[in-house]
Amino acid sequence: MIPLHMKAVVKTREGEVRLETVEVPKPGLGQVLVQVFAAAQNPSDWMKLERSWPEHDVIVGHDFAGVIQELGPDVSSEFRKVGQRVAGFLNACVSVEDGGTFAKYCVADAMMLVDLPDSMSFESASTIGLAAFTACQLLWQNQKLPTPLDASRYSFPISPQILVWGGASAVGQYVVQLAKQSGLQVITTASPQNNELLKKLGADVVFDYRDPEVVAKIRAFCGGKELNVAIDCVSVDRSVTLVTDCVDDCEGSYIALVLPVEIKAKHIKSDFTYVYTLLGKSISGKYTYPAIPEHYELGKWSASLLSHLAKKGVLSTIPTRVVPNGLADTQYWIDYQKEGKAS
Ligand SMILES: NC(=O)c1ccc[n+]([C@@H]2O[C@H](COP(=O)([O-])OP(=O)(O)OC[C@H]3O[C@@H](n4cnc5c(N)ncnc54)[C@H](OP(=O)(O)O)[C@@H]3O)[C@@H](O)[C@H]2O)c1
Image (cartoon, rainbow, N blue to C red; front, side, top):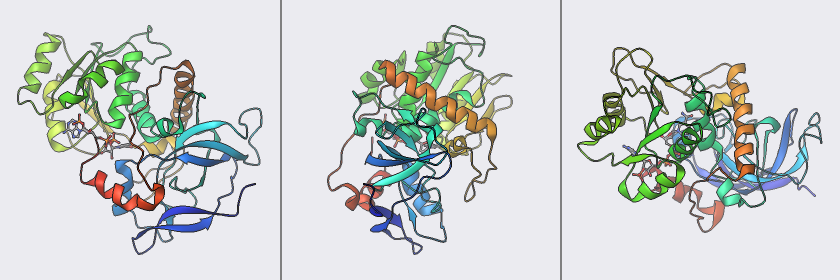
């Protein structure tokens, strides 16, 4: 039986992060109620805690993996089933309606769920949410790159190489594997201890981003061929400068960004994409967007692609560290990540 109340980590109107007893949400039209078995932490957790000041107490936490417990009034039992194992993400920490995942239950869009094979643990699956959907958005929202479903139907870019800066980040690990499965040659950067992990995910070559010669080495690896597409999974001033130096400054070149930073180049196009637009609803706060139907279509397509890859056993989740004391220590682990200690 679904209880009326649950424990959840909330950000209070005063800005405190507290474990509270709150009402279990009800699934609305197009939604399902998920019992959360694991919830992963993201940099977005501390960023939103600092930057959004909603009028009500809101639930923290974006990523979840768990089991469907109830279907919304119009959700067909042919499409979603009570007892189904799923993962996904929410636009958390902004409103009571959008909810959050550091809780016993959450409601989620039935179309935006990744179906989990029995072999995938909830802890591993909880890393799919924001990171894997962001990877899909970075690769396919503004570029006509091949996908794992049509890897042979290659038409763009001019060069089949892609540079993924920060391949060891959660987003980067999904970009690397999805790009490789799409038939691209993947050049990435990471700390040397992550080389092996990234090679396993499909990176063709890994460079140390702290090496003062990193740009020259990447250019040398390209061997005179143009490098036209890059995804900067870090998107701070220093990474953007280095990525821009690697990419050919010509028509057709493109850099996808995870944060809104400016690039200094004459011809290279760049875009900051915001993963929450994939949920198909308007967004207010630090970044404001209307509901964008094309983004929602990409979100639903990404959910089915990730489900397909998970079922085939070719979706590699991020290595996890399960922290003790669960939700009770949320503030400690959010500070830990903010201090840059998570790798
Ligand atoms: N736009 C969006 O919608 C969206 C969605 C999700 C995330 N994001 C943003 O994307 C960024 C990454 O998120 P995440 O969850 O993937 O982060 P994460 O997993 O916490 O990333 C940590 C990793 O980033 C790597 N890194 C840090 N600085 C680097 C640099 N200068 N160059 C290359 N690699 C570097 C480190 O790799 P090594 O261990 O190899 O040193 C570190 O392990 C965050 O800023 C996040 O807010 C944006």
